[in-house]
Length: 459
Image (cartoon, rainbow, N blue to C red):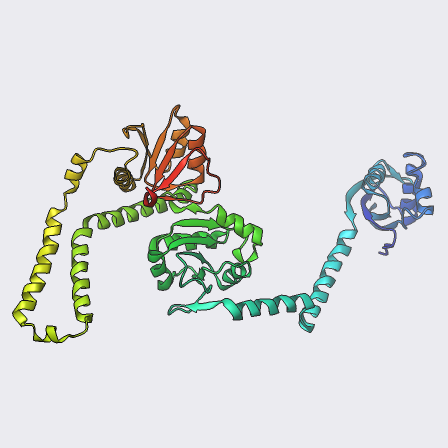
């Protein structure tokens, strides 16, 4: 069946049934005759066909046992609305020749869809041909620049030869990313303290670095990034979390997106709480509690052992003198025993923690008192609202503290066993807080002039 592609936008397909034997001219005559004057001059079939808006009507019918069935195809160059009206008018036909008949529209197809399909298929063939013939000029330039950056700045770190920026050895804080391309993208914008984990199996070099540096994990905004974060939380120490926008990768980000993501990085505990990662949050807190207890019980004898070890190493490194060569052996032993005795005396003179608490009354303006209180809150994972005398007014869990403080009427001093975040600062400013004490500062970009934000090391 021939359909003129030059004028066809839509193809009207009508199913025809007649109670008797009819022929093709009867069907065409019925279509023109019974729709004439029905829709006015603008949609008259004869005028439309003369003007090239309607193509040749094609009919396919078959007569069996005194009945005729088939279909008619009418190519239309009209728009959707006019084609739909024309198709609906065909269903008013009730006779073909001398026989009763019924016409039912099966479909009004958009012929251009088939053309679009052919265009897409041909475009794919042409694109593949272009790719096989060689890279485009732009791809070649990008590749050259990347190779130069990689050759000039990226290094291999540790036994695992991990891709890293040149500042990874000296920087106090590091950014952990997923792959080599992430490191390259950050290097392109001047961020050089990066290292890639190269998969979900976290390398030992990254685990070791996490115990020595402040670690920010900067991961893709997909499920792979979630898996790497969970693995990092299990085997390494993570201080902050930054994520690419959902559905994007770090290697795709622009300078503005990278700066925004790192500027609004979130402390790990706060990130897990906000995301509802309760199991990971519980494990993270248990791990921190374990480390805090370990530090609490070990310091005294570890420090003394270290002092003895340093002293012995210092003695071994001293150059030999004639007087030392002539000094009797028993005098050297007595000298060494006296030094040990001095260290033991210093240890005995140190007051017990309970005695310190009894003798030193807490004051909000006393640095030592503040440090002790912050240490206690760190162990308990709490935030306290205190009055001007330092007496606790309210205590909250770290995750709930900002919301709880926002509900209070009067707040002057806040002490937290966690990171002082921008959100906590904003809420405390609204409540008129004068000083916030905490373990350390988060990424605070806006600090009110009439409020002091004091981390424990500055107290």
